[in-house]
Image 1 (cartoon, rainbow, N blue to C red):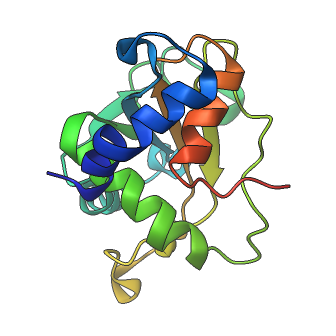
Image 2: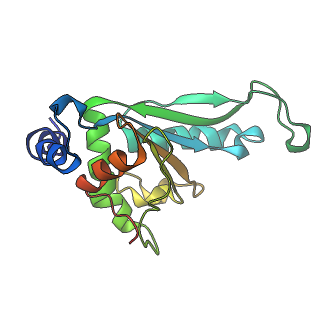
Length: 179
């Protein structure tokens, strides 16, 4: 079992319940899933870029990503409908908690010129989305085998009903927000 998951259910959840003033322990917000998306626009010209992105995302997430395809043709970008343009992976359960733990404790502190995550990136349903500029902040990536620096989007879905509860959840999980 993941250390973060164990810590959340045993220590942080009762604390969060008191902090938010919720009567039922089941009403306390929790993480439901994490979606990691990597857009690879260069894949329209060369398929090697997509294969490299798939390998990187597999190593980072710990499971095989799916290939996303273009929904419609865009003539100015020379893209046809159905062409592979990116990859994404959805993490749930123990893999999700392992990824969040590695992200908070190892990867984000390694990011260059990092000043904190934007606290305004919550949507109305309590989900948090942010971008990572370089995949090399993860220690699993071998720097010598990289052909191109790529960014990725991380979307953290929570069971929170609003922004404030979701922000309280992520603060309890030690997300480094800007002050």
